[in-house]
Length: 174
Image (cartoon, rainbow, N blue to C red):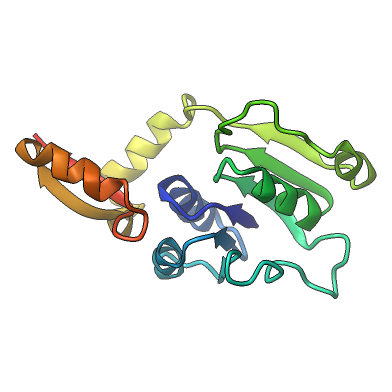
């Protein structure tokens, strides 16, 4: 499985994939710090695609090597990576939101590889399952929670949350 975007949603996708039994999960990002968290969460490989753009590709699999790709970044280049790196018959799940909703999808990849496209928005059906897993302690998301602030310090919390190099997920305590 390939996950693009190692922010909070990508990190939680990685955890969910591991929990569901994914044999191998690789994750990409353009910032090193979230990839460090992803590695601690159990990513088999964490690719800094800003520093090494071709690191996901594998010459032994020129048509792609992943059965599933979950695009969590909302960046068109990540979508392109997913389509290129999915193996024939693979599944792409689009989760990330795009700033420009008119993203071009190269349908030749979809057709010639016989890919399946899926999407998820706000996780409405999955929410009760996620809450039950968290409440039972079967899924540990603590590594994703990088900071906690009292509600009175909300401005500092938002400043911290806006810097991907300093934070993953910031929690406000009421």
